[in-house]
Length: 346
Image (cartoon, rainbow, N blue to C red; front, top):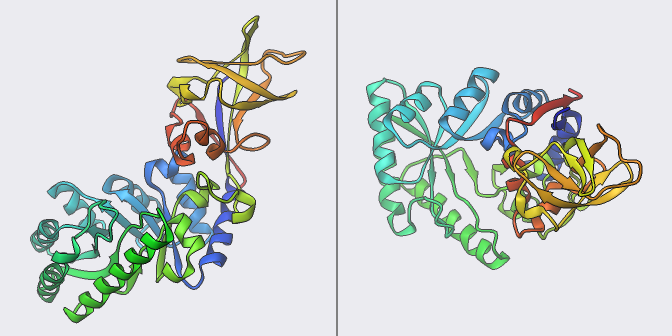
């Protein structure tokens, strides 16, 4: 008897359809970092491709390489973490789109592109205030000029301009948007002709249509993970696609011992703060040990009874996260490979 994370690929495809309708005419870049938010990279990208997704936000080069090997040459794959010459070389060789938020990195990319005689596809990043890398506004004109000069040599092609929003307030996002638009205009004055502009992720992409531009990077919402403190899944039109369950392996005076613990990725801070779903309804999560947890016992509890921690018939990942002031993505990405992934539908 083991724990399992059951992923409903049909629900995932339904979320993707809803996202497409919500953000049109902008295009959806599905973010698949951290093993597709813990849901399993390869099954997720295969179903997304079937559902019509053509842009994938891989974050790192290794993930991008897996997406390329799985989906082939037609997929557009965006990575924004390439910390060494070898990673840059691999990204260019695999025709990954590279997010570049540093002038030195821009020149490194061009140098390696010349070495391997293959132009790099570059998205220049402007720092609009989040300070999650990006070229500072006061350096943007010089960086755009550098990029235009490098593009004229054939070493790079600047195909995009992008940034991250802080999503702290509408006022801050408005200021970031103005900075972003100014950067796009400055890049065009420098002679660049980026074909895609992308600024928003899940929450802002739904709430602020005027900020979507050509492409939106949506990860969490695609997996049915709502924002902490924000609208619920029903209001957003999305459905959680994963259900985390485990069997009862022992029953004693403490309660029902369940085969899911901290080493499986269940945060110990949830103990005493949340309820889980048992065959007899909600029960308190009393303790989280290394390899098991203890749940409030219910009448006629039996070995093998299934307890659901989040998902179908239980709380959501974000509900659990809010119990210790975190976000649903943290719950999802913590789930260990020790927990089997089972795929439904598709």
